[in-house]
Image 1 (cartoon, rainbow, N blue to C red):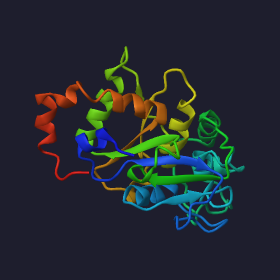
Image 2 (cartoon, rainbow, N blue to C red):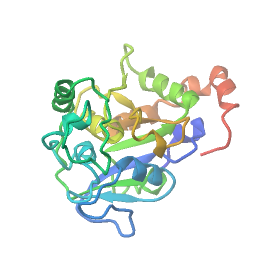
Image 3 (cartoon, rainbow, N blue to C red):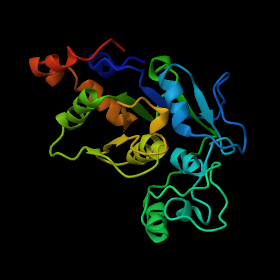
Amino acid sequence: MHSEIAKRLKLRYAPVAILFTDEKPPGALEFAAGRWGCVAALLTAAAKGRRAVFSRTTFGCEGGGVGLGLSDQYSEGVEYFLSTGKEGAPPVGGIREPEAFKKTPALAKEWMESIPSIAVPEEYVVFKPLPAVDSAEEEPQAVVFYANPDQLTALIVLANYGRPGHDSVIAPFAAGCQTTCLFPLSEAGKGRPQAVIGMTDVSVRPRIDADLLSFSVPYVMFREMEDNVPGSFLDKHEWQKIADRIPGTN
């Protein structure tokens, strides 16, 4: 599947398609059942050309299960890991030190209960480089771009280009996999879905290039943005001045 956006923005890595399926793709990267792993690491691998698959026993960590729509809740006590910690609490993902992403366990608990919840009906969630998607046989649920500040600027402008107002993009506080998967997937069923800036999770930043963030959209919004490229600012001289300083091509 071709992306004119990726071509115009000269993305470093391919956009990643998120797909649901009941057939496990052969040769895809997958965590061992019941073992800890970071979904963001496999998203990065997919952006670099690999394929990754997740099931209800191979989603890597609790946040990843929720972020992929393969699990609908955190276990009791995770609010302490996200905040101040608790004496005697077991480590999460081999890490004993609390993350301190929320000031108190109560705030962490409230956040856990506030994020969207989706339930993937299929057996597997698959990450695949968008160019490897055969549009005649499969349709992504969402598309994820890795973008530097110049490219992210263009994506934000394009997301708002064909719409009234100014709020077609959000940047929620959440785990990396939740901003790239859960939030855009939950937007898919809305009449006016929003794009999601992500990978602002401190714990996953080491797993992607230092100058990149993610920009994720439900598939219907991806198609909307692709259709809006011709005649937009991407054809104009102001964008060309920026494009000229972006190295390489997608």
